[in-house]
Image (cartoon, rainbow, N blue to C red):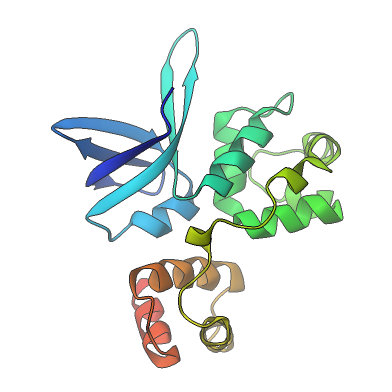
Length: 194
């Protein structure tokens, strides 16, 4: 029904965003991945998945189409609901999740809060082979700064003692907002957010 919602970011928190479109505020459930993308933005375009339940109508928003497609694949697995899928996408980036599913690493997937080993194994079995339809990432996912610059900035943050996953998420947001930034600038801006 909805492809995307684009407008002014009226309110944003790690679990939700309110996007104002012509005076109407849309409440969207988001992952930490999407939160990192729009946290400091004034305007946002979120790709939407709309769920109608007996007791609620829910909008889930995603910064990229790839993240939305992974969400749709996850909720297609029996026993995985919208909140569990969102928790998985908050724990792992789309690239990390694709790697976990492709390699069949149930132990890593089980690390997601509220996800048991049986459900993790079920996700791996159900989604193995379905990820080829996703193919490569959206152009929106590819950072405009040189990959070498982003890699150097990431290594610098890890050497400073930050967790690789957290540093990577923050760097992705920094690169989206400042596509031409040098390594030093990337590290400096990332440090302010970590």
